[in-house]
Each structure stands twice: as structure tokens, then as C-alpha cells.
Image (cartoon, rainbow, N blue to C red; front, side):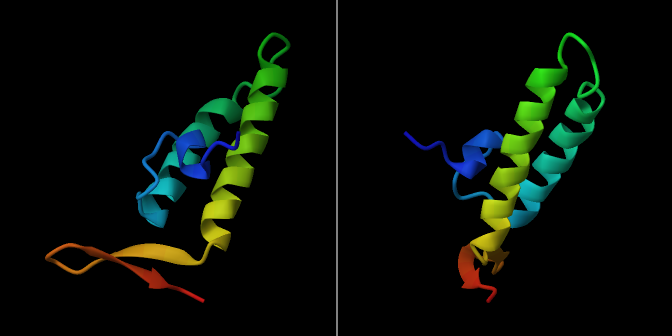
Length: 78
């Protein structure tokens, strides 16, 4: 069973790309401090790899949620 790249970043599947990028940056900053730690390093490196793959998939999808004032629409960025 595949886990949604949004779920890996702790977001709902309808989150905007900007929200995914912000979540990635926050989590990346926290885990980067642990990647060389003897006790937690392996976990942190694996989590960082999964998060990097997740944000890459979200960005590669080429879609972003665009606010229209009265609701959101999805726009193809390619």
C-alpha cells in the first residue's frame, strides 16, 4: 500500500504545493539536526529521504491549488 506524499508530510491530499513546501522545510530542519546522531541518525536519514521523495512527487505533479477568492481551483502549471 502506497502512502500519499502529502500524508508523509502530515498534510491532507488537497493541500497546496506551498503548504507542502513549508511542511517539508520545517520537518527537514528538525530532522537534519539528527542525521549524524549515533542513536537517531539512521531513522532521521530514512525520514529525510522519504520526505524528499514526497516533496519531489508533489512538485513533479505540476499542479497547484490557486485561491480564487470564493474557493480554490486546481491549475496545471506545465
